[in-house]
Length: 99
Image (tube, helix red, strand yellow):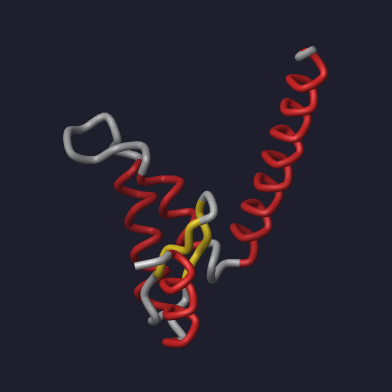
């Protein structure tokens, strides 16, 4: 199935989703489930030194929480802007070095 079909299907269903590296990831419709799941991922991610759990759970939990919590959403946007500026700057430097 084409990625655009998935995006339009999610939009048609009214299902909330977050964008990660250009891909739309559907998240639960229930606000309580999103906040509970995001908090659970963050808390369990703090135990990332244990087997099965991992530190990867913290950013994923924050990404899910950013859909409902304004403070987390603002921080995510700041990081996104910083990352895009950083990548544009590094691409400009690489292209200037190449003959």
